[in-house]
Each structure stands twice: as C-alpha cells, then as structure tokens.
Image 1 (cartoon, rainbow, N blue to C red):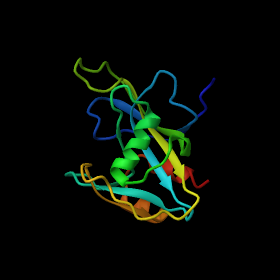
Image 2: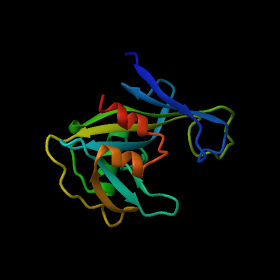
Image 3: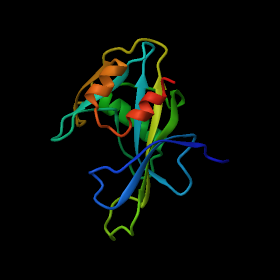
Image 4: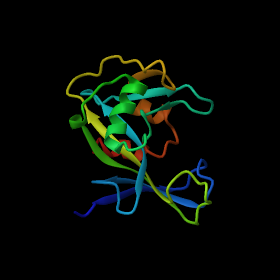
Length: 173
C-alpha cells in the first residue's frame, strides 16, 4: 500500500540541535522509512472546539495532548493513553484516526547517543466527538495542570508558533 502524503509546511525548529528538516504532513500512514517516537491527538467536539492541555513545565504552555511512545507501544495506543492522562478524555482506539504529523529528517549522521531516529515521525491523530465536549481534568500524575475545550481561533492564539497548526487547520477543510 502506498502512503499518500501532502506537505503542508517545511521548517526547522530550535529544539532539534542537529541540521534537519521538518515537514508537517497530512498522510494516510507513517511515511516509509520513518519511525514514530511520539503520538498526539487533535480532539474536536461537535462545535468544532479543540481540547488543549496546559503543560506545567518551564517554557511550555497550551498544547494538544501527546507524548512519547512507551517501549513496544503503537502510536495509536500511545495517542489514546496520552489523551486520557493529559486531558482526562477516554476514547476507544476505534474512535481515533491517523491524520499525519511532523516528519523529521536529520541531515547529518546523528551522534551515537542521539535518542531519536534520523528519520523520525511525530504521529498526529484526530478524534471527532458527535457531541459538545464536556469539561475534563488531566490525571494528577501527568505533567498537565488543566484541560480546556477552546474555539478554533483561540487554538491559534494559545499555541502560536506550534508546527502542528497547519495540520490542525487542515481538519476544517
């Protein structure tokens, strides 16, 4: 099966300290040769609002729920787990659809102790609720302090500069 991929944005980001290229893509699967190391969820309710979480760490802020895959965990399972832990929203894997992500290409040979693949992928999924999203609370053990359903324009304001914003916008097409 061929993976259909559409590049929405190409950039570099300051948190990758090696020469690289990041492509934000709509895709039908993780592109061939790339390995997912993180999974995120764009949860949308029937009113078009998005569930954001406030990450309680220095330099962080409002983001979409997500994080690293545990050993042996699939991107889908990580997305479902992270959504529950960081935002308090419980969904089944059948409600979650892969939509693309951030395709990271390291342009040099990474150092031996570099913790990520040279062809890495930050997998993004969508959950579309058929009702208005109810208030949620992150797990107290998570790094998130609160969760909130916010309007589309407010997502862009709170998450200004986030590389995934074009992917979020593409869901409203």
